[in-house]
Each structure stands twice: as structure tokens, then as C-alpha cells.
Amino acid sequence: MKSLKARIAISSLVVSSIVLLLTGTALAQIPPPSTTPPPINITTASGLQAIINRVIGWIYVFFFVIAIILILFAAFTYLTSGGDAEKVTSAKNQLIYAAVAIAIALLAYSFTAIVSNIVGGTS
Image 1: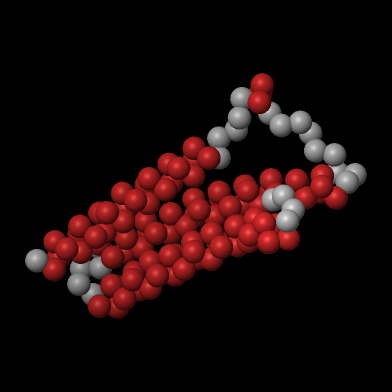
Image 2: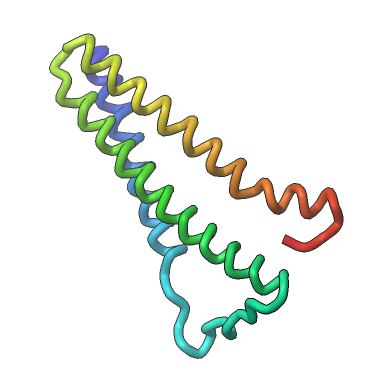
């Protein structure tokens, strides 16, 4: 019975990870040439900020793809542990670390928008 619950939990984790991976992939698609944003002028502070925002956006997407791969690896470790308590503990810790890292990344990514709203600028 415990094994069935564990398999259901891991299966739902794998499915949700795949959904997140597909979402990240869809967000990372390059827009068609007709909607490509104009080149950014680096001679102003806002131009530099726009470049930094683009780079941060790509790093953000890359981070989530890596995080999902690590979650899938932790799920694989959990499923192949064969009841070994050390491997199960390792897999659980990997899942916890991945969840904490994702939460921190979400807060870090939204931090600029939060500060901008408080100060009164645009993000």
C-alpha cells in the first residue's frame, strides 16, 4: 500500500514537472520576425536596464528547465531506490532543495517588479 502511494506521488510529480517544462519551453520561443522588438539603445540607462531584463528573462527560463530536469532525476532516484533508506532520503532531500530553489527564484525574479511598484517606477 505504501508503495502504491509513493508511486502515485512520484507519478504526479513527474507529470507536473513535464507540464512545467512544456510551459517553460513555450515561453522561450522566439517571436516571429514581424513582432521582433526593436534594437535596444545602450546609450541610456533605460536601454541598459532593458538588456539586463532580457538576459535575466533568459536565465530565468534556463533555470526552470534545469530545475525540472533535477526534479525528474530526484524522482528517478526515488523510484529506483529499491527500499534503500539512504537513497530514499537522498531523493527526498533533492526534491526539497529543488522546491526551495524554485521558490527563491520566483521571489528573486519578481523582486524588481515589487520594488518598482513600491517606488512608483515601471518594471
